[in-house]
Image 1 (cartoon, rainbow, N blue to C red):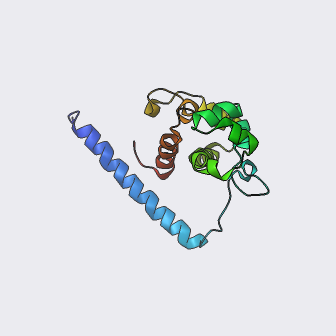
Image 2: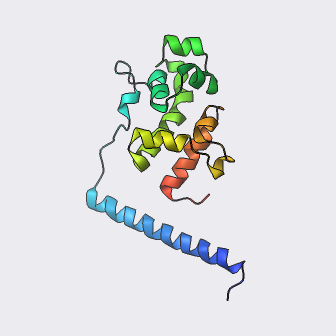
Image 3: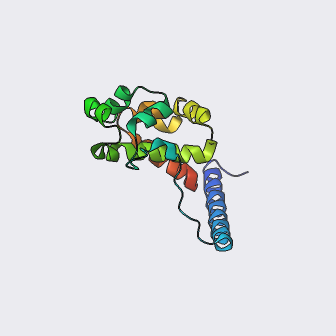
Length: 154
C-alpha cells in the first residue's frame, strides 16, 4: 500500500497526464474547426453607443446596487452614476466582466451565476466571490475562474 506521500504524487502525476490529454484534444479540435470568429460574451453588459462596459448593467446583472459596486471597486459613485460606461471606470470593470464571462461559459443561466457569486468558496478564504469583488479584489476572482476554466490546479 502506498504511503500518504506517494498518493499526492500519484494524483499530481495523473492530473498532469489528464491536462496533457486535454491540451492535445483542444489542439486537435482547433485543427478540425479552424479559427473561431471572435465572440462578445454578455454583450448586454455593454453600452450600445460606446461599446464600453456599463457599470449599471453590470450591477443589475450581479443584483447589487450601483453604489455598492462602484465603491467596492474603488470608483467614485457620483461619476459612475453620471456616466456608467465612462472610460475612467473601464479598468476596474474589466476583471468583473471577465469573471462573469467565464461563469457564463460554465453555467449559462444568470440565476446560476448569481448563486455561484453568493456561495462561499474555499479558495477565497471562505468568502463569496461577490464579497471578494466588492472588496476591490475582482482580479483574484478572475484568476481563480481563468485557472478553473483552463484546468490549472489551485
